[in-house]
Length: 449
Image (cartoon, rainbow, N blue to C red; front, side, top):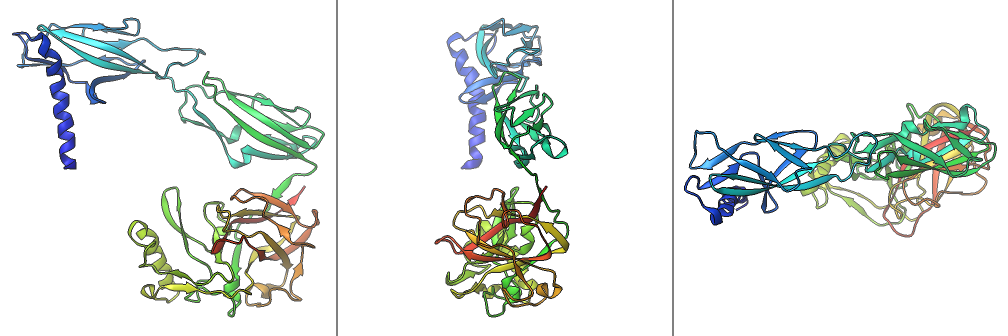
């Protein structure tokens, strides 16, 4: 039945001009149509932009080889004129004028051989206005050091993009809500003042669209600088603690989970997702005492519409010698301690923790402890959560609960004390009361300069 519908529309489109001619039937022609017209919303339509012309091709029934002597009349001749058989719209606007409206609708009446047929003409403004001003995450929430200088400036203009991308006029103006905190040049360079505080930069499109966007600026006595994570790796508790939580088969020490990244089905959950720069992906583990978590690649949820994820899961299970048909399960005890260890490949100096939750309020960690070590053995087989090889860095639990989304948060360790270690261990202390798993979208360390 679905295949018949387009033919019905086409038939209706062909008949409509005939119907419009029934009241004024002539001997010369039985019907009069324009080839360039399309059928849309129960009407015959001609579409063109205001900076183009549209030649019209006339057809009659019965067909004739003789030139068709037709007349064309538009309802708004100041919008649309016809010379010969060529439609020519007037321009909507130009220069710095406001580009309104986006479209105008006219009516074209074509007459020949005693017949008159009406067509709707939709004229689209070729000048595209800005609908949205977009900012990167760094541009939306700027952090700079007070006093200007290299660490007290930020190029806001470089973080801007527009919707649509080919908007005609992409010039903007900037305005600071408090110039004692931060000023902004006409080129979009934000410069801090001599006092700490916050200000809002308002960005306004200059094409008359009225589109605006705001950027938050925080001026600090220091500038947070995240460490470069090139080559960083991590291992999780299950790989180091045989008696603790283990995903079966034993070679998988994390919970596979499914997300869509740019429309592509992607299996996530591994420690590598901590450092991929994408907060849609996350390292995922089972919360202690949450009962059995079953993941069978052939079961509902991993087949059908999610078959692409199921195929990836099958490949993962086979890669560690498992049988996909048997499924996998996890059943952690309530007293299991979840943690992961990060190898930064060389000793790094840091003062704060950068953390992004999984984007789900109930699938996260609330508080944690942080340990440091320079002993290589802690990464290759140590089983103790604490012990002489580890130094606890925080004097009280680090609270990461203030933010419940996957937005970046930077939290000083012991009020900005400096530490230098190659290995760090993150030990989960508390979780929300709901949810089976927890996820960490991004992990990093940094230093305030």
